[in-house]
Amino acid sequence: MTEEPYTYLFGPVPSRRLGLSLGVDLVPSKTCSLNCVYCESGATTQLTVKRSALVPKEAVMAEIDRYLDTHEPPDAVTFSGAGEPTLHEDLGEIADHIKSRCPGVRVVLLTNGTLFDRKDVRRDAARTDLVIASFDASGNGVFRALNRPHPSLDPEAMAQGLMQFRQEFSGELWIEVFIVPGLNDDDLEVARIAEVVKRIAPHRVQVNTLDRPGAESWVKPADKARLEAITAALGSGEVIGAYTNRPETGVSDADVASRILGMVQRRPCTAEDLAESLAVPRGLVDDALEALMGSGRIQQESQARGMFYKPL
Image 1 (tube, one colour):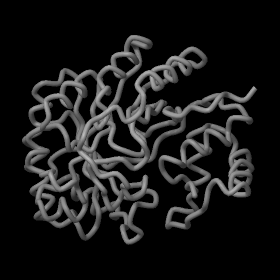
Image 2 (image 1 turned 90 degrees about the horizontal axis):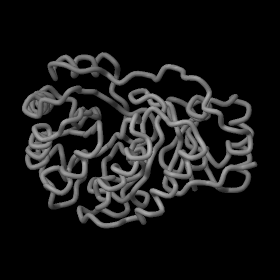
Image 3 (image 1 turned 60 degrees about the vertical axis):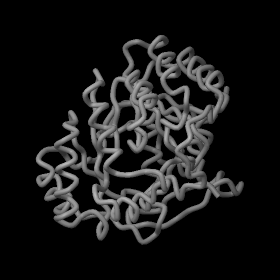
């Protein structure tokens, strides 16, 4: 019997950082406070800093309950998706609900970090176990060229908010720095970022670069040597690497197409990405992709790492 599709959940998928992670998407697609040139979800269509009940919290919690009633608990439940989770005003309440249902599961927030100068955002984020926040640029010009923020945002206010959160938060705070060659990879900007990271004093620093199609086609990945040099300049940290294989996730044949559609709606994936994430044979993925292409629900885009699939 085919499982009823989820609207607000995706995965679980093997994460190179978190283990087997069930995604929770709290905002409509491409609703964000930034419009980053590298964003794998594509260009932001709703640029905002206003918090609201962007999707019904009751519906989100009902889907979480349905999933946990019928599946083994994942390693983590992660607020992520195709927009900025802290824009949802009920983030903290939903985090509490997850913890009440599965106390041993790590609750994770992936965030662009832009709203942490707000007390209400810090209060909600503090109800998770791990926050992974981005900080890609210290200089205002670089910030505006790379992250293309809402006009009200400022990188120094963002840094101050993350520093305040680090002092208040009992969980772990990681900082991710996304490198785009030609924008934030020069020695001066790296030194500025390093100074901010030192002030924030996160538990972990991770350096990342483009791995799948971004919002702008001209964005290219940084090479490994440069990433390693930047990591060294930051004083500590790691270049995010490939995820190691995990046991099968137990996805049935009938569910593969709907799970694939849910994944590519949030970020482009190759067939290999999908087979690894869903822990199903590559042939089954290929058959599902062919059917989805034939029905006009997805399209292809060729990139250096291979053929990526994304929604029409």
